[in-house]
Length: 382
Ligand SMILES: *Cc1c(COP(=O)(O)O)cnc(C)c1O
Image (cartoon, rainbow, N blue to C red; front, side):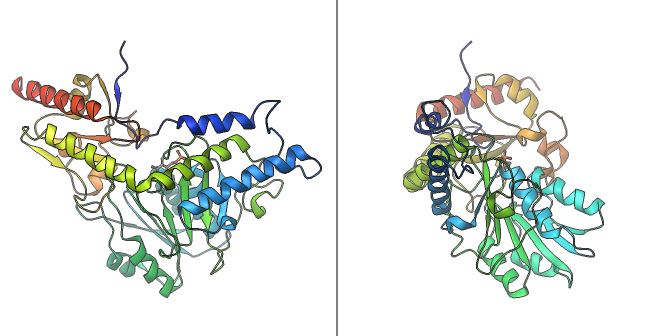
């Protein structure tokens, strides 16, 4: 069977070959396989040096200080650590988030709610964005944390994080931002964006799965309680032997992302235009989420009169997603699309196409012609 064209880069990306090449050097007996926490011999020192290089590379992409980077197993763990780490041990506190966050944030906040924390769930506008004014209105005396995503994984829309951050800084409320879909897709700069905590993932940026990081601001100093206890690694914030090969991979991937950011954004914009012009002839297509404030690689489209399940069946040669990957095992309409005001019916007609580094113009042209064919055919037999 011919492999389908991969248009699901927002779910995960392949590891860049040069990243894989780097990672293998940190696994085998002839490589640097030591425990980075081993202080008594060169095996440990070399591994530690590699971890610290990667820490600088990850920090550099988001303009952070390397000492502000805490390694985790992914953005899910980073989100958990940020949110639970701020709230832990405090009673009578209030947290603000939105109804279209990634499950890693949603479910963490739901769990807090079940344990007595008050949570305000902000509703985004039709474009998928949360506005600074809404956040301000939601603040209470006892608000300790606001958690919002920089880029939405289903829609690709960008929140006004800098504005919201400035406002929260004035009010002395901590701000956690899930930037898993933003890093490597747009400029992210914590020196200009007053956020206190920020979750990052390796595998959305051509690094390996199973590694991520939490940015924890040092100035002003942000304190969080560890959620995983053990050897006191990562300045006590996250214990566990560091996976050197994963970390080296994430570092290299973030370095590549930084070097190629502008060119890659321009290339993805081109692919998006090729794709959109390929389906121009098709009527009844709606772009879900913001049209102008978005990252170039993610495109969420609704097709009038065609449900996404049938469309995906017809589009066997394309690997795309309806809703988020985590929700695709269920036939529930996407809570993100429902969250921006689409009806169940409209939400059931949406597919997410996401492009990336290895997507070619030919693949995109093929995808759009397939879509035109299948949508037209499905509409004809209605
Ligand atoms: C993928 C993703 C996550 C989860 O990241 P993992 O590293 O897979 O745990 C969290 N938030 C957003 C917005 C994502 O896209």
